[in-house]
Image (cartoon, rainbow, N blue to C red; front, side, top):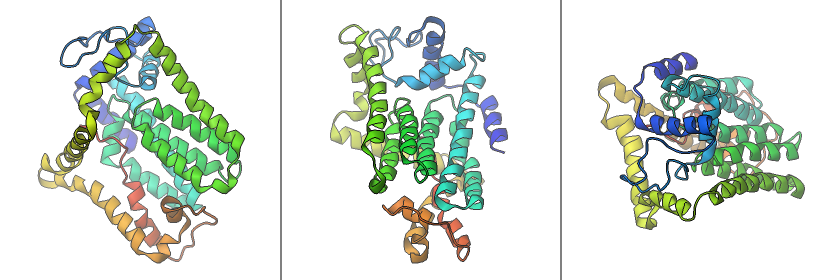
Amino acid sequence: MFLALSIGYSLTRAPWWDEGVFADVAMNFRDHGYLGSSVLDPYSYLELPQAQRYTFWQFPLYLVTLGSWFHLVPATPEYMRILSVIWGCLYIACWFLFVRSLSRNETLALFVASVVALNYTLIAAASNGRMDMMCAALGLAGLASYSCFRESNWPRAVILASVFGAAALFCHPMGVLMNVSIAALVAFDWRQARLRPLLWAGLLYLTGGALCVLYILRAPPGVFSAQIAASSYRVAGIAAALRNVLNDGYQRYVIFYWTILSGVNKLKVATLIFPVAGVIGAAADRNLRSRPLVKRLSGPQPAQSGFSSIRERKLWAGCWYMAYLPPPFSPQ
C-alpha cells in the first residue's frame, strides 16, 4: 500500500521549484562534475555569487546522490521522486528493525512499521523530489543499526550508527536531530563504551567535514561566506530564529494539518493527535513506563528483556506515539 500510494503520488503531483533547483544542480554534477546551478541568478532575490559553479547553500550528499541516480534513470520529476520512494522503503524497514531490537516483539515491530508506512506525511515526503526522505532514512538507519548490534557487538553498532549518522548530517542540517538521538542512545550504554570505536566514529564525521572543507577551499575567496550569508534570513539573531521557528510551526502544522483543509480532510490532524496521546499514555501508566521499549526511549536504562503479553494491547497503544512521529520534515 505504501508503494502504491507513494508511487501514485509521485506520478500525479505537479512539479515545484525546489525539485527544479535541486535537479538542476544534480544534472550539472552528472554532466560536468561540479555542483553548479544553471537556473539560479547569482544576484536575484538572494545573493549567491558564482552559483553557476558552486553550491554552498545546500549540503552536498543528496545532490551528489541524485546526480549519480540520473546516470541510471532519465532526469525527470517522476524518477527523481522514485529515489525518495526508495529511501522511504528504507525508513519503514528501519522502524521495524528498531522496534524489534528494543522490544523483542516482531508482531509489535511489524505493527509499528505498518502504521508508519501509511502515515500521510511519510507518503508525501517519499513522493517529493527533495532530500528530506533520504536524510530521515539515513538517520533512522543509524538508530536501527545501533539498536540491533549494541548487545552482540558494541563496536560494530557504534561504527555503523556513525556511518549512517554522518551521511544524514551531510545530507541536510536537520540530520543534527538524528545524530543527537544516536548520541543519546550511545550515552545510555556508557558502561559498554570503548575508546577505540568512539574514535573511529568521530573520524568518520571528521572525514566528511574535511571533504567539505576541501571543496570550499577550491572556490574563489569570499564565495563560500557570501553564499552562506544567504541563509541569514533564517538564523539572523535569536529573535529572528525564534520567529522563524514559530512561523514554521504554524505553517507546517496548523496550516498543513488543519487550516487549508475542509470536510473529512481535516481528519489528517489525527497524525498529530496520536503522538501526543501516546506520549501522555506512556508517561501516565507506571506499568507501561517499566517496559523495555518505553524505558529505552525515555531514560538511560538499557533493555534487558522482551515484553510480556499481560498488557500488550496497552503497550501497542503507547507505541502509537512512535508510529506516528512524522519524518523531521513536513513538505509544503
